[in-house]
Image (cartoon, rainbow, N blue to C red; front, top):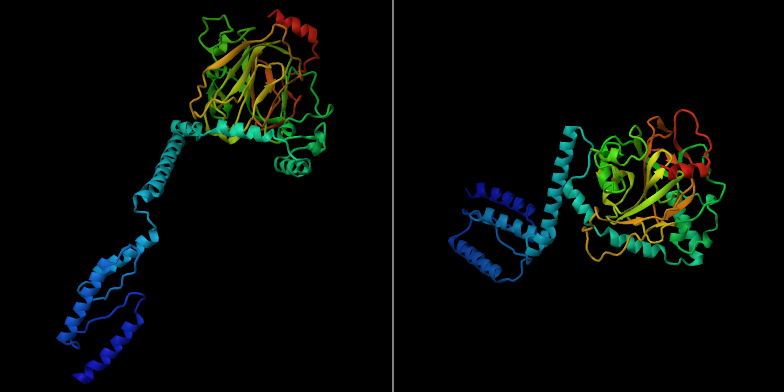
Length: 452
């Protein structure tokens, strides 16, 4: 028997040496080879090690245990838990739960809600737009404070040696054509705000004299078309309320009209209501001009949010133009009702209208976030002799934003535009009928508008 057992014992001992991990020592008790005294000594040593492990302080101390057939699985599980807690680095503490697990859980719930909302819109065949809770979160961001900080920074003086580098990088990033500016020397612009609102040379923009309405600025056309009901499109598939955008039609004496579209018309009930939305990118010419010969009568200032008006956000958020701060000018032109709206946006330091010095936009409202009342407005009656000719300089943005035109015209009015088209100030937007309009006489136009 001795000759038969020894080779197996040697072979087994070799296997034990090969699988021996560090720092935990593994030994296997062999009942057929150990005496009872050795078993008692091993059990005593095992108990002493357990007592030493209980007395040791700190959850990251290394614990060495001996393997035995009776408690091997239990000690293995405890060792794995010890190493897992060491690797987790405090994720199971109260601080870890609130600062690590809780934000991850909130993000997972928000992602799941977003996915379910998009899937429901896809099932109904609607464009993927923001839910009400997403709009509330977006409006709660401190965008007004950020915009005021950016306006202050943009107005700071830039050192003369650094101007070519700074303005050159900006021109390269946003595609600014400095050769069109009245001054092509970067050193002549004291600050970023002056560079944003730079003037152009006299001969780089041509105002079409035969078109009844022209583009008021450089930009990209987001949407154009008719406004046949109370909700009109800001981009394709996403609409906003006309009454919330313009406010109550207090200037009209038509009290029996069922819709605001019919109520705001001034010339003929057979006319239609049209709109055109133009987005100004950061690299565009930031000044805007009068799109037609018209008479502004009322100015309304809505102190709302300062959300981004980029095309991606406009496709995602319904009623964006009704939420944002805007300066609305209501009046009349040859064909009836006419309105011009300059919509503010994130990082727009201010909207300046040259004929309206009392207008103050992007004002400090305190530390309140997401509490701006978008339906409240300040109204000002403009002087009776206010009149703007086609192409006349009207105002400027201190950063990119959006202009919305809503006007009345005969039903044979046609836009000469394409969705997403890039336009330049003075370019034709549309005309009445198939033929070109004749060059209008400014004095006759004023008399016609006054008699309306």
